[in-house]
Image 1 (tube, protein in one colour):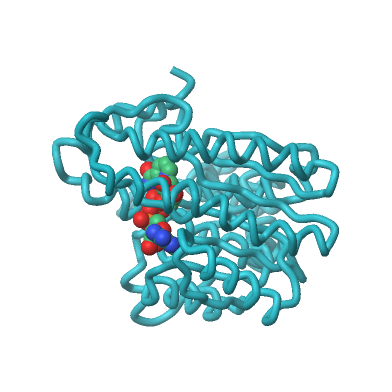
Image 2: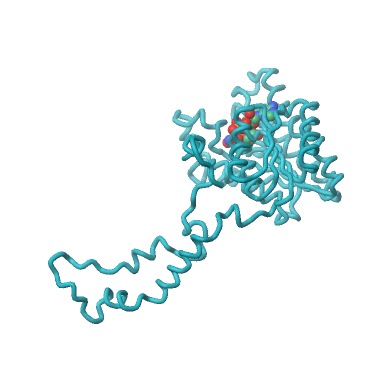
Amino acid sequence: MRVRGELAESLRGSGLLYPKIPPIQKYPGLCNTERAPRDHAQPRIPKGRSRHIPPGHPGRIIRTKPPRGRIIQTWIHIVSLTLPERGEMTKQFEGKVALVTGAASGIGRASALAFAREGAKTVVADVLVEGGGETVWIIKESGGDALFVRTDVSKAAEVETLIQKIVETYGRLDYAHNNAGIAGADAPTADCTEENWDHTIAINLKGVWLCMKYEIPQMLKQGGGAIVNTASTAGLVGLEGSPAYCASKGGVIQLTRAAALDYAKAGIRVNAVCPGVIRTPMVERLVGTEAEAGLIAMEPIGRMGKPEEVAEAVVWLCSDAASFVTGNAMPVDGGLVAQ
Ligand SMILES: NC(=O)c1ccc[n+]([C@@H]2O[C@H](COP(=O)([O-])OP(=O)(O)OC[C@H]3O[C@@H](n4cnc5c(N)ncnc54)[C@H](O)[C@@H]3O)[C@@H](O)[C@H]2O)c1
């Protein structure tokens, strides 16, 4: 994916762009171009010394006949430079339509970009018009097809309209990543307000159910589909000061399992991802504060996750490679719940 201009500048370093990956990382099995020049570098001739290279000296061998390994590595390097970007190589979702909710930022945006990279026409749904529009712009700039539909996932009528617009525009819906969510207010259980409880459950849990309620009938008409709901490790283990959030994410996991059983024979697979601590706007507010070290300490892997690392799991769960996987709540968490 290539993004140019001012947006590219503002996104640089945010992890949202697909960086121009040097061949060594892009095709790790092919060659090690990073080491090659150093390993086979000709020895420098110190100033003032004779330019004559004596027979048997490694410099002489390289000048007359480069080692076979070096020629092969050079060719592989040239060929790898002419290969298309990874995204252009694999278009496993060509002709398919994907919906991502909460795609104005963070995990949802990364997921929308990943679906688009795989060739899907991608529908971006969010309450944030500016961020949603930006996600669509990035996809279109990269040659993809995308549509933004402003949607509050906690409102049945808006979700119903969203699915209608998708079908009107693209004629089908193959994949859905029901990801929109909020952290809610931090407070211990007895101090959690009714308003915070209702609001968090309405978006995080009811919102996921409403999305599936309107996505599934369309998928049934087409004979199948794949759904991934964003839960959280906070749905698998408790998190202090977040009763409503934990309850909502635990609910998403159970809802995912129930829906998976309901539609297993109908060709619709329903799974969940359970992200650990992922560096997105939801967590960004704590970066630079004392809480940051605590967040990183929760992760056995020693760092926060990237939104793209969750997006790759979502794409895999939707892909044919995961054709026997349904009702699964997959941690993408740097080992957080393995402790
Ligand atoms: N960041 C983490 O560490 C983390 C960990 C576990 C789970 N999650 C979950 O991942 C999901 C994405 O979160 P994120 O970290 O990318 O945060 P984020 O704040 O960047 O993204 C959430 C998106 O959801 C949208 N949204 C909120 N309410 C909505 C509504 N009613 N209707 C439609 N869209 C709405 C927001 O506008 C935002 O764009 C959430 O469900 C969150 O609970 C995040």
